[in-house]
Image 1: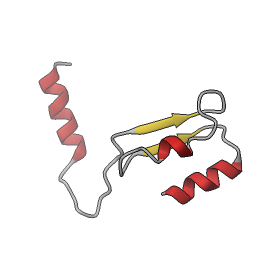
Image 2: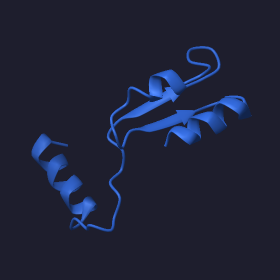
Image 3: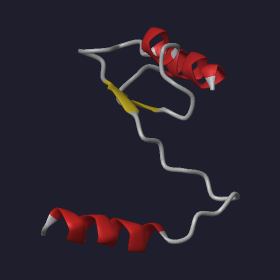
Image 4: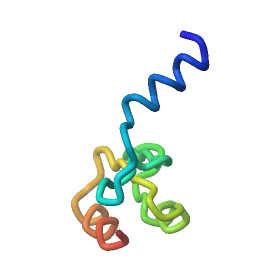
Length: 69
């Protein structure tokens, strides 16, 4: 698909902007027990509206991470 065709498809799928609809995060932080076992420190430096996907994290750090939101 050409770049212009892809951009047009994205505009069609997004629909009209709505003040009530929340935007999908443009930035995601993915963590896992090996590479980033406690994502709280990194999450503090993310811009507003970013998302954190914490895979395989123990319940205690998850509760603390949720408190940052």
